[in-house]
Length: 60
Image (tube, rainbow, N blue to C red; front, side, top):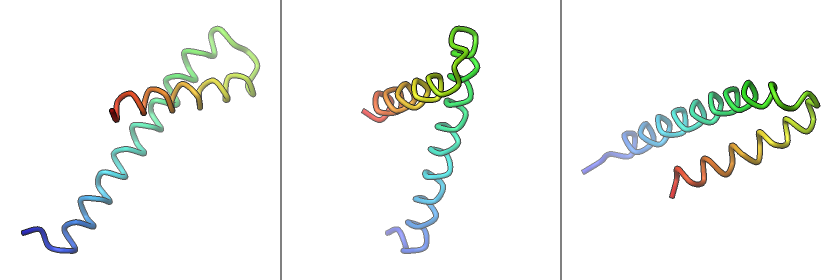
């Protein structure tokens, strides 16, 4: 049986790993798109949309 503190630790670990994956994915997408799109605002919007789609596909 999993204790309460262990559930919290597992949740915290998965949240940290998930945010790290999202952070590095955002940086990688920005580096790739910076070669094609020079407008920073448009690039930011595309990074957010693409990162969301990729993370949703990985989650399912």
